[in-house]
Length: 110
Image (cartoon, rainbow, N blue to C red):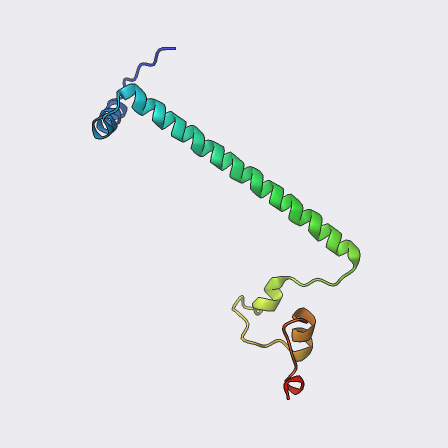
């Protein structure tokens, strides 16, 4: 397959890269196409990884719901009804329930 490039801007860009790198026009095009393919492969791999993670999260969420253990959206713990960060307005009960390993009551420290 022969490639004929007629667009002046494209020719100018190839010449500019060729002058800066000392590579032939053919090498400049080959490198550019390889880099574009690598970028597309990375994007495709990222999309695949995200799909796998979302599938795993969905599977784990389903399994957790099936156990009957009560769950809370983390947003409910971290943000108030206006979407602003909470400023320590969880009750002692909520703190012990949601953070059992890290919370100690004030009378436990005496």
